[in-house]
Amino acid sequence: MTGRLARTARTTRILSSVAAILLIAGCTNYYEIPIETPIKPKLDVSAFQRVLVAGFIAGGTDDVDGNLETTRLLRSQLRTKSDLRVIDTDVLPLMEVAVEDKGTVPEAKAEPAKTDGASDGKEGKEGREGKEGKGEPKAEARGEAPQSASADKAPAIKDPKDLEPYEHIFADVEYWKKIGEEYQSPLIVTGTVMFTPHQRSGIVQREEEVYDSFGRRRVVPVRTYMERKGYILQPKFVFIDGRTGTVMHSENFREEVLYNANQSTPALSSYFELMDRLIPSFLSTLSSQKIKGTRVLLQ
Amino acid sequence: MPIRILTILLLLGTAATPLAADTRSDAQKQVQFGIAVAQRGLWREAIYRWERAVKIDPKYAEALNDLAIAYEHEGDLEKARVAYEKALELEPNNALIKQNYELFKEINDRTTRKDSQDNQNP
Image 1 (cartoon, rainbow over the protein chains, first blue to last red):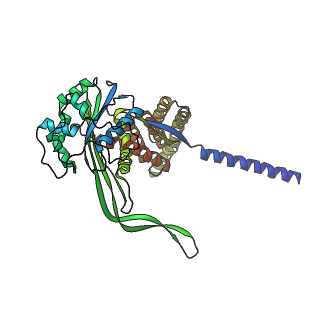
Image 2: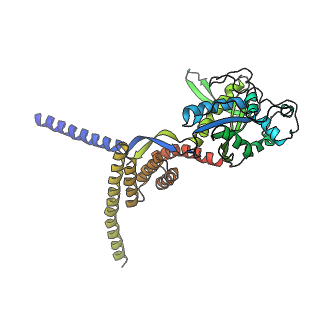
Image 3: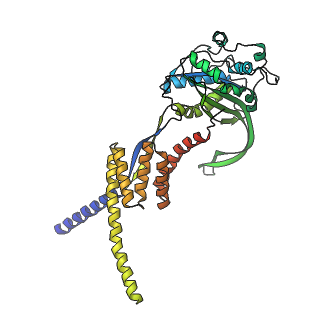
């Protein structure tokens, strides 16, 4: 009897050892490991110590001042997420400068241009450092194109095509060189920003909760016709060498967001929602970034 | 005559099996060592080990997977892509390699999309 018990115990021990070995063997052939993928910056900005976000030629909805808001947001992001010193100065009235520079006003549309002023009194999420966008007096003091009658007549930019008559300003080497000299040869960030309302209707798939006769809950996909509205953000960032006035690099982006037609979302919060999506790409142009993740090593 | 040929082929086959097993076993040792050093953060050494493993056994999908991860960690995305794709070619149904590759692609696509969005002069 004792011998049988001892044999059973031994068999159990052997079996559990085999099971343990099998379990370990099964578990040890893969290992989760955290990794950090470095993404090299697109631009070599090692020659610059300072960055000047000069301003933007903006258009689209009147509810958001694309020039002012983009300048503030990029300055604030660069201040915290790059090694470059951000120059705090008034936003350049680029649209007016472009009009003055060309000497002709593109065919005027119904509404006047709106590049200055706050965004309908709404406050951006990055906080306000005073209304720094009213740069006219300083611009004049710097010898830049002052506001003039022709500038006042600049047409509203409602469509990306409306930006074309102004884009020559980015290739104006003399103008940017002058700005560069004034701010001790920084990297200059400028460009265009289109923020336009957008509407789309069609079939949308969404999930709906249903309960059967036994009261059991199920989630089923339901296709419904929906009217949605939102915004499209199309910025173009132009990077100019403040030492030479030449364009180093430029990037185009496009992001859009749609909400239920009955949902009321302020234009400014949509603007920040869309900018949030492309800020990492903007920053990765200037500074290296590390993307954290997990992978599985196999044996 | 055909029986003799068959016998020779059979002998060659049985002789080749332990050889292949030896190759895999040698490569496995390198992979194992690579994993141990990678877990300590010594990624360069891990790369060396996994490159050796792949050299010993070019059909070792797991070694290629590990090598791809190490390249990714070093920021060499092009080499990582090639290694992942080779690994998946060898083991297209390996869910873990697929998962790693999908995660890698998310990062890689983002950087390549950024490239294609460039237009140098306004």
